[in-house]
Image (tube, rainbow, N blue to C red; front, top):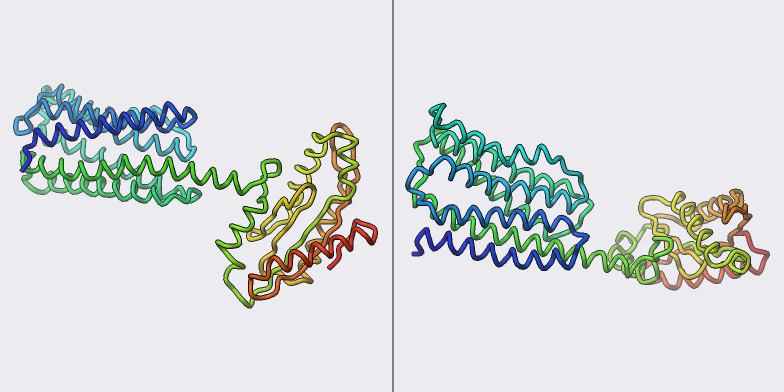
Length: 377
């Protein structure tokens, strides 16, 4: 069996290795400021491990050693939490973070004068540690907009930390538990395993988010922020018509009339402004499940789940009127712009989506031939 000193040493070495990995990531990803918080968390826990390595746990630690130990481990937990808040784009309240870090150490400070026992100060430390670990779990649970499987690993690890800290609080409060080599040995084994989950989880979260961003960039039109063709094909594969064979679905294809004339008159920059304005108007007409696509150039596609051809025609007419009746303010000029629209209903099964696109495209060209600024099916 490994002795306690060896465990403390291996803990420090493993944290040093993770520290090197995170430093490389932080240097390469300078915009990812949350990485520096996690680096601080690893460094603080590394320093805490070194303090334990140099001080026998069976002896009552001097006040100044306890203060160091509590501060380092609280800093590790709090910086883990603040790093997650940065990761999710939330603001930080530095005074609150600082108070949580130093509170257990401050309780140690008057211990010799107030006759406080090490038992009491240790109890305060584990209560604060449980709070900090719990805040990490809550932060991850609240991050519903982030669809990262890897964050569940971190949440599981900190749930374990929180539960273990609370267990120690209960044992200290209601039993005669004393910190000894045996209890420290078990806690070190637990910490070795759990810290690996945390640090690997952080790395996985960073990589998973980067992959999602790359996929989003590949699926999104950079000018309008709408799906591109690749994006809509992938989205339809992920949620094909919501899986309901009996539910109707329609497609709408619209093309801005005489758009080449706009580009020739105002240049491509003016044309881009028109496309962005139209995109905002299009978004204002969409329901939650509707999917909008920049199909190509000045051509736009809208997928309307749970919508038959009659309802799709109502939607298309509303979009046409919104485009026609509200002039576009571009480069100091007020432009009257219209749109021609073709619609079609998707036949069942859902694999007939491409056929519906072809039908809507034919209807669009019919609208163009019949004079533009109209809806055809």
